[in-house]
Image (cartoon, rainbow, N blue to C red; front, side, top):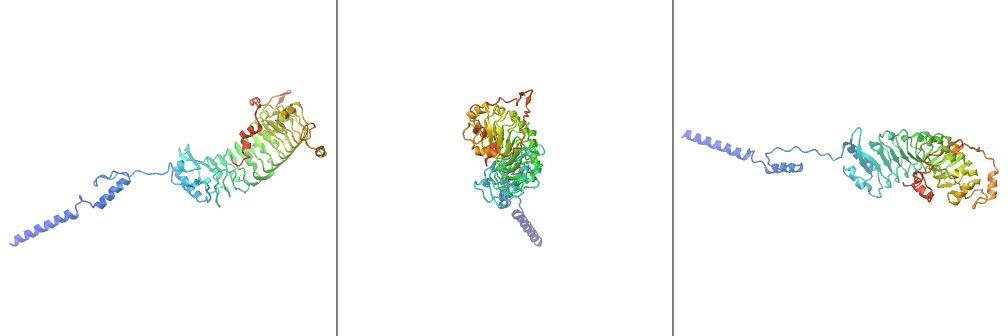
Length: 440
């Protein structure tokens, strides 16, 4: 009887153990919350939400930026965004998220070859955005965009210092900060850069322009409409630039004779409305590729050198509003591509038949001179007063393109049919004259 009872007790204990394992330790009946949570996680990361017992798929990598080079500039742009307190066109509203190349207005990307061979931020084009802010400067922005080629920000309110390392930006070739709020001296920080396009016009830069500016390997040099005040640097002619505009500053002194060294490259140069004085250098006649030469509204004096006969490509020659005198050279009036020869408001005393033809064609402008027989001239008293003082400019008959009495101008001298072409149309296509507008 005792043995039977012990057997029954053992059986009951074994049954209890089996029931415990069935209800508490059965791994085939996992908690629904845990199972559902794992299935949800699989769905989020791209899994299929399959049976609980199947292994989890490895989550695919997710990288929001188009390249590592784009990731580098993302925080730079966001930091700069905080400096902009005035954004009238809501440009910065597009500067959200990682897709800089496709969504951010004012930025463009390109493939960076060479060191990285990947997509990079290649350019900034803020022209006309009119950004403003009390601390809207280039420092901490342009110098932290390592791959940019172009930075154009015409018509904004940039101010303050230039980054000291801006010349170290490896690929920066074009810098346009025209029509902004700079009031400092010329930014020496850009010297030593590899810029090919430099546009600083319509600011209030002051002081002197370093001579090194005219050794920058640029095609375009626009520094007009500032407050630069100095004698024109002697190495002006060292510039390799094709287009130069120095107008509406306070440059003084003569036009350097070195200008002749730019004869193989210079296409357009505008020096108007400064304080230039002295005689016209004969070396201007060496500018065989020049189509525009404008030195109007200065204090230049003397005769027009006969070397100007060699300006075979010239279309606009503007020397108006100076103190020039003598006869207008007939050979200059025979320049083959001439559209406008403006000599008004000087003290010229005579012209020949070729020049008279240009007057009749409205190509040569001679108002307010001292030429008998032409309308709208100065009074005799004005002319007499001018010629009562000694004139110090020597006469020069040097014609560099003349050989054995034969004038050999640029070989493209007949490339332009000037019939029906107006000075207005020539100025409209001129890059140097375009720089006289606040917005290009």
